[in-house]
Length: 245
Picture 1 (cartoon, rainbow, N blue to C red):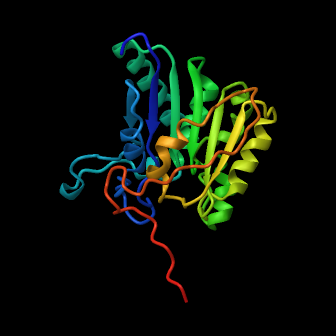
Picture 2: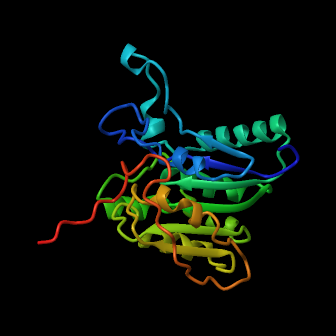
């Protein structure tokens, strides 16, 4: 639909780059979220080096762009060019950004740099890589930009951030750090989501979650979320209940 907004979904980090050099996700969570969206203009973007054909044939992609440089300035510049190309080619007006995991970091940085972003949504987002690294007891991405340095620039953008109650990889402290950096909380909305950890439970609830308001004036009132265990892939990704002792 030309001359209308588009929703841009940005994929997560994928497989651990420290284990191998192919960061392609085995479960493309954001692609599955985008498939649940239902709006006329939905575009999904992968991350650098994901879906790079020919891994088994020796084709390589600079490993640092899926590791320490995953949010490097040149990565952000490339996404800005991609968004400009999308707008020009499809006649898109404004952009709504949705980012998952590390894709949330990219979405937040892009939101601070552009004047055409009308909303920002993050899912289990890495909004403060330094705090996330401490929580995970892993190395900090010292070759990357951090959303923390751009947070204040998103203060006027309507946004909602989703945190899984069972998420130990991106716990609430990551979002809390980012929210303090935004400082102006008028446009910040956050939802702590039941039945979700870092990777499970999001697709099953996305049709409800994506429609929660991103409003800069209305009070943020928690709403119950309907859990649908079979939206796209049957119950393959359903969170299994813990066995009773």
